[in-house]
Image (tube, rainbow, N blue to C red):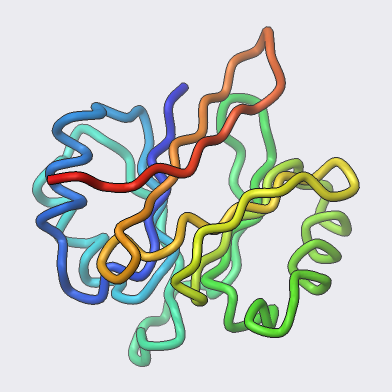
Length: 155
C-alpha cells in the first residue's frame, strides 16, 4: 500500500493534484492547513480515499483534530501538530502515539520535513508542499516494516 502524505498546502493544490496523478497512491493523508484543499482533492480524485485532520488555520472545521486510523494493518496517529506542540519538540506527539499503540505518528504545522524513529514509533512530518516543497510517501507491506521517504516536489 502506497500512502501520499501532505500537509500545509494553504490553498495551493496544483502540486498535490500533480503528485496524486503521477504517484497513483492507494491513500492520501492531508494533515491540515487548509482542510478545504483535502475536500477539493477528494472531488478531483473520487476513487482515492483521502483522510484528513484540520490544522490551526482550519477555524470552522468540526472534524476531530486528532485521529487514529488503520492502514495496511498498521495503526497511525494523525494530527496537524498544533495540539501536540510540535514547534517546541516532539515529546507530546510521541507520547500520544505510544499511549494509543500507534506505530506511525504523522503531523505537520512546522512546514519543515522530519522523519525519525523514536521508541519504535515512526515520527513523520512531510513538511509543507506549498512552502518547502516537500511531501512524504509511506509504503506498507505485510512482509516488511513500514518504509517512508520525504521527497521534494519538482514540477
